[in-house]
Amino acid sequence: MLVRLRKLGAVSEEGGPLRPEPAPIYGPDGRPQFFGDPATDRFVASLLNLASEVWAQEERILALEARSSASGPPTDRDAVLKQFIERVFAPLREDQG
Image (cartoon, rainbow, N blue to C red; front, top):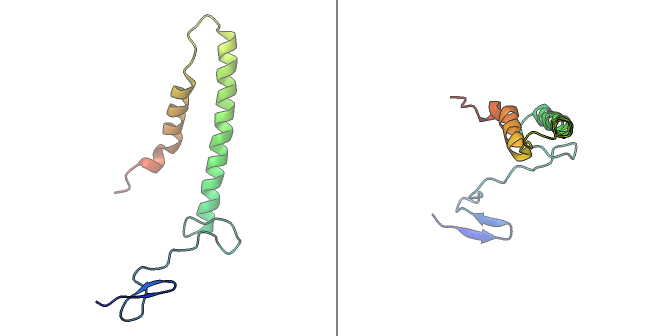
């Protein structure tokens, strides 16, 4: 197969591109689009916003518990955060097969 080079990239002998052009990252509304359906993008953004709000509340609770039980061992914030992330995003890690 003979390959020629053009300004915009490599093309095959037939004139077609060797690789398909990447899909644009921005949708028609100018916002980033990662999934085929814009509603899925909005849903994922809502899920991430909700998760960040819940984590903010969790941090406040940890701070209040640390104040009220000064004699107990301190809570490992990083371990609690890791458990939180595992719980929230576990459905995304499940095998669909």
